[in-house]
Length: 251
Ligand code: AMP
Image 1: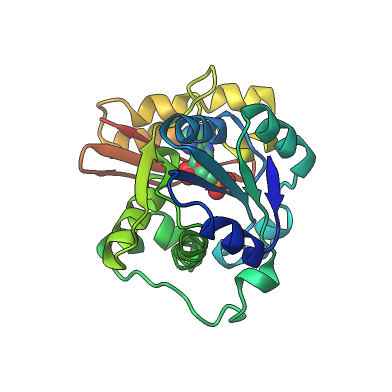
Image 2: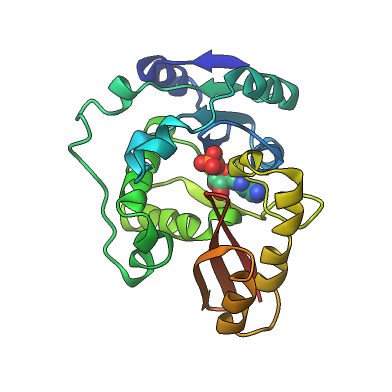
């Protein structure tokens, strides 16, 4: 695994990759089995796999959340070495935002204004901006995104279409723990007891109960941010002991 910290260095490497396909998995680190599944898919699909780890300040609506985002580079390196990826890209803020955050991707649509867009002001703009930058730098054939963040995945797909980006966006199924809870870096902040308790969340999302009944069931135990059904998929966000969790299920 070659670790690349400079954008210029990657551009040099990229120039010499001509006849091999490249798969790319952008992450914020603190890797778990959800990330590994995207990486494994890329390794199967492509000749070369590159993973990036970058905690993007522009997508955090809450500064505390950004500061406290778990940084576990040594553990991440071990996981990535075991998976045998080819490149790890670790860009730094001053290189990746030479514009000092002055240019942004904005999506003004019914789909970006609701749910995570409504709850986390500026989040999607920050997320789309970093994804656009990374896609332009890496120039991969395929980029892998989890259905765990379904609204993000759809917006990235729509953005690449809108800006004629060549990279194909590959959706990947949500990986869940033994209680059916979607793997997430945020789960580390919960106790084993709390993790068991939230198994009701994905169960209710995947049930055929109406949204309002699900809300009242969840409110018995948690703070509910939203429950919403769109096109045969139910989305939800709840807060458990100050930890905000999102999930979605096809119904
Ligand atoms: P993050 O590091 O949280 O930005 O996530 C990087 C990528 O991993 C995103 O495309 C996420 O949707 C995906 N991801 C995170 N958790 C899971 C999961 N449990 N199952 C599948 N993909 C996931």
